Length: 153
Image: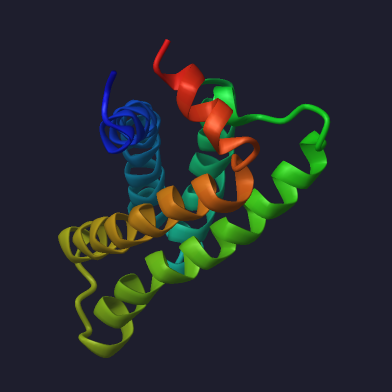
């Protein structure tokens, strides 16, 4: 019989792997859209990154709900509650993401495309750690014991 910690780590590893795939796709989507909004459309850095993050987050919700954390979804709890909590977490994630973008642009006067992209990547990386923890805890948190058992299948 497997050690309980090993079982738990295995379940988390499966979720984390799926989360990374969904997140990787959404990261590329977010980065490309932010660049297009900022350099091609001519929007400001905060507006560009906000729009790209909102769009990528919408795609992320679908991927995480239907795949990464599908075994944790409690259909009886209600889809609207999941979306509300997900949106709240992503507002915090957006603020985390925007901090390096705005510091680079407004405080450091780094207004090149590379500075914008790198500061967005840094912010997104920090926000991703927060989001994974928060999604598991508050959005897709139903029946964690059952979720961990079904993740092993």
